[in-house]
Image 1 (cartoon, rainbow, N blue to C red):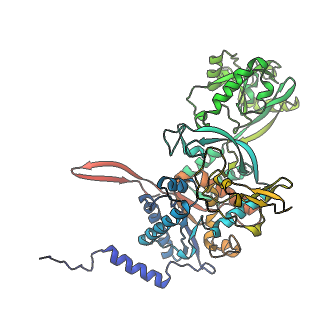
Image 2: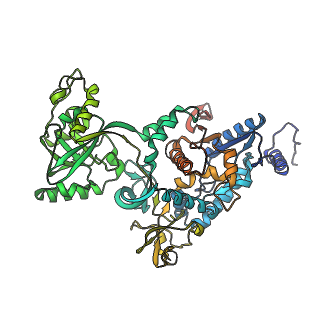
Image 3: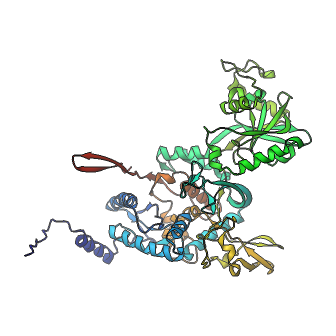
Length: 590
């Protein structure tokens, strides 16, 4: 005989109690904020999830619950809280998941979104589901493409050849963060290669100083010190001088140095293997050796070349430059630790006062000339002998300027944002190439450029997007002259999708504008933003940059998108056994 027990009134039965209250909230529109006439608007935003797996993971629940609790607290304080949710559904993670399970992303990702949506509804967050968005929806990525066109028209989007990390297994460009110790993060045994491809870039470096300055303005940004420090380090402001080292019969080699006080001790120069002057400087008797070295370096990935404790390699070009301070010829070499993306792609090497240069000089038998004594004063430095080295820097810069050999300048570690991806699952970049008219932006009235159906969506080793296989989509008439032309087949980086999504949420129902001016003034910038600290640099930096561009173009009246940002903690699997009980330690929610 089966014994049954009645449920007491104080017993918590989730499937009963939660369903009851969620139904009540839906009936009374509790979580549907008046977007047009709020009394005390408070935009409470959490980073939207990637539907690149079958369902949400516990980390999503951990983060979303903390943010939701805070939103409910603000509502109890009398604020009109807007808490939207959506899905960051384009990009390499979703496409790789589709490849792994053998289902086309256009079929798999909507299925995953449906499951994510079901799970999010079950947890009972105060989400305003009227404003849901997905980056894969043409109603959304139409405006991502519109955003690209605004940057292009403003001169902030451009093409250039660039060195990139290439995974021969993924068949695509990888961000630096996707390369672990020289190997693809997805294929741990696949060595990442270096390739040179023509890419689309955004001029984020034009905004480097503003991106830095605003971090110090507590009245504009209430962010944690760890996050602002990470951004400062990534931007990497450096004061110094650009100096020209003359080359007989050719253009001078320009270097950037933060220590022009050591220029009298520069005994050799080193250039990146990709430097445009390599061919000019290479002598006939060194050409074969240099070519072999270039071939070897080309097989290395960029990340491993940045690692500081690896053995440095190099080769002598057979060419010489002249130190503008001493007038002496110094040899010019190539080295794998010099990168075109930093500074000018060439350095003046001062081995007496730089450990990396000294290591290189000792390995290849190059001169070492000390120019700063133990007391920090200059020696063997011409008219500056005896002066404190650091204090002499401004005068040395003026001395170089007077000789037309250099100029004082500021440089940044930050480099322009490469947005091109040679994949299928992303918004097509809205550009058309015409032999008569050149590079032509797709007219705004023709947006969106729809991502076409493509059965064979897997990338190959050509470095060309799979979209190039669809000639019916790829070949189009030029919008300006009507002659035969071709579309850009690269899609844009998923970071572009997420760089502006906070603007779309309050205006998600409008199809004739990316974001409504009135609602944007009411709700933006975001009052409170919660997310993972793994996005403390790139996502937040790109979002800030896009906001600044839109501000300068007159589309929005603020230039910082998130007033307050807090990174949530992590769930760590440090298990400690007490008797037979296994406990997991949870890090605090900040």
